[in-house]
Length: 183
Image (cartoon, rainbow, N blue to C red; front, side, top):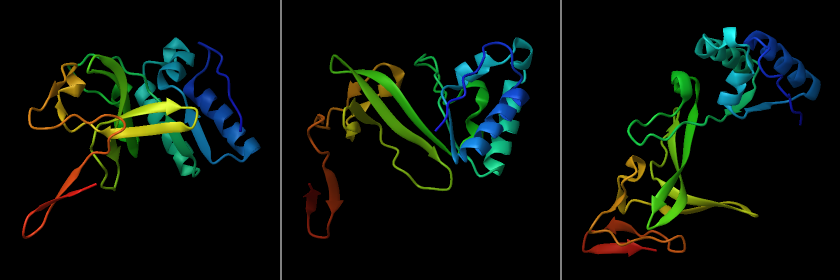
């Protein structure tokens, strides 16, 4: 494992890519984490920020061409009016997007997570609560009984019973003779 500390405000993305490639060879790394794209962009000299999207595209192409798995985080401002998943329209570069955000629910600030995109794969589209504990990430139940969670105005759907972190959501399975509930 290694960390490349970027010197603020003095690099081109090509210089940064050279440092990354050297570190990959030196460490025999197979994975790269950029935490976060906002910080990465700020580390570039101001003249190189103008074409950040195109430069990032080139960098991702070089690194994935080397067989490197990349994880990039991006902090986005919550406006509750537009749902964006990447800065600068860079979501097309990714194979998977996992959205995490805070929501206010039943008078509490809670963390919510959803898988937005997994290229070439079917995946759950449920919005779920989660907690980060000393044992790792603990996923809560799906929040299907609410609507408007991402708009900042959540509302309980009248016919759905509330699901707490401790409850397991119930799934309905239709049978020929009657409805059966799975636990």
